[in-house]
Image 1 (cartoon, helix red, strand yellow):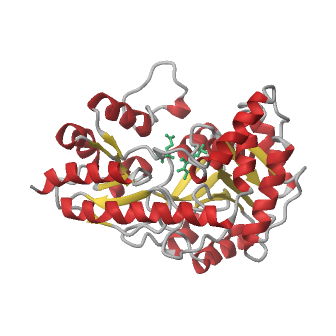
Image 2 (cartoon, rainbow, N blue to C red):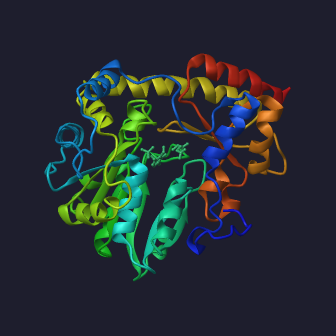
Length: 391
Ligand code: PMP
Ligand code: GLN
């Protein structure tokens, strides 16, 4: 959030400014820095996925796909949910393809929330949550996760729920912390959702990117939860296709209908040929999914010692593209925003100040996120450059 007032901009979006990802990627380009800021891989995903999309373009699949998404992708999503989690969804009423997880979030939040409704969620949080809740005229109620473990306080979570709470918004594996909620933590959330009759929106875009044998458990698999959870995922992270913006929602028909009613007036539909590509990806062997996670884990294990050697306090990360550090050992005033704006000039590396993921900004002021979804040589180069901080 920035403080200067933007003329003409709706009051709902005053303070949101330009996303930090756009700002920091532009800075990376301008300074020729290694970009460990915005989370995107620097290699292509599987050939089969790319070829399926190319084949669809060459095959003439270039007009509007159906509003719900191409049947081939909806079928692939249903099969994926069954194969990995034992969850059954109806292909015609319980799946909706969207323009990335971003539009899935927007469609669900705009379709479900009324003015004054409250959404309980954890901070740090992905930046679009707060903006979409604001656009819906609703109110975000954050519960803070704190390092190093980033667990939550059950009493704090319980206290955040009021009679105005309509939904809980959960992200696991979690951006930016790499926290993966375990079954016991999810059970607490499920119990509260059932007790207060709440809908739960689960952002699971990093579902396949978990490390060290950690298991991603979808909240919808817990007893009594399948029909109150609207789960969100996206092909961008798993298949290295973040520019394709193919995401989806799975949930009971009435929640899908609410999200679809808003979604149809956002993009209506998008990315027909890319939907075919992601369908091919979702059908790939187990070994592919394991390989993606193992490769990313190796990149994590390459970057983390480098960050430690540069002098940061580095927190554990169990999933996603990201690792968070405390900058105070290398910058005593703990100003992460100033540190990130200065780092490209000082070291030729770009990172993201975690403060932007918090409503209580002071909680994340001294924390900075580095992405490790990059080629080994790129990570080596970043580590070498960051060593200047220690020297
Ligand atoms: N949720 C989280 C937690 C994310 O990190 C991201 C972005 N990468 C998104 C949603 C948006 O995903 P997409 O690019 O598919 O819109
Ligand atoms: N999700 C990615 C990240 O957290 C970037 C998404 C974006 O640029 N909006 O870095």
